[in-house]
Image (tube, rainbow, N blue to C red):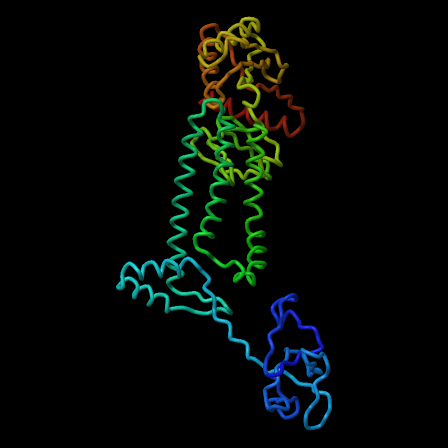
Length: 410
């Protein structure tokens, strides 16, 4: 048998790689489609080429001559039909689990085969009911493992006494993110999902997730930054103004992934997004020190002894248990009002989370008793009216006087 070689270099598509040796195939006449034979009646072999090409003798390197026409021989190889691609399994782990179950029990194996037969094909990807059950089971397993690992790490971090509350909370957040990230990739590995099968949807899906979770990731990063710079921490008493100008005052209960939980004195819990605390002004009453100064305005009559009144104000402030003795309470004359002499009592406390309205109420109630005992008058608004005379006013006064006289006579 004579073997012919094409004068064209083999292409990677035909051979599998540029360095691999091509495999000769039977040749046919490009006009008639009949097999090409040599002078001895043997089938001519050649290397596949994209078009009919002149064939050379592999031993001599001379062109092959058609025995009938004497012309140089050109030929095309037989076309080998490419096999149809079979759908690939989207979840590789499902096939392994199915084989394992079939080896252990024929009954369970037949049930699994029935579930696996209920499948749909999307392009080259095959998805069955069995694949869905395996995915759900692995997801629940991974979530349970991640949740347990998060609780365990949180318990271990709480035992570390060298970390303060802010550092411990930051460590818990970073550990939680790392655990859930590892759980995601572990689930992908356990399922054996062929991610290339999802390449068609990955771009659109990633874009949708990016837009949908943009605020969530922004709040997550903002919460981590707040914990790193220790500007706010659980237990701080803060006042936050929203876009409408309303102020929310309360104590920070916890800093979550998305929002900060603030509990007010009336036990209302506000969830403020972390980004708001990054861009808006925040009044932190316990950032560098928990000492807070309160101002309590008081007015007394112009006829009273202001020195005695000032002494009683200081006494009332000192009688309050939550008021600090150092720095001591002070009393300042604030101004001369329309109806009273205005004072301001300034006191210091160290537990703003306990409320400030109750301290003001206690001081004022104690001051009321002291003023009553000492005869200090708390004034009410007083006005002097000057009425200008006129003919109508004189007639009105005369009518009123006439009625008064008539009433006296009766």
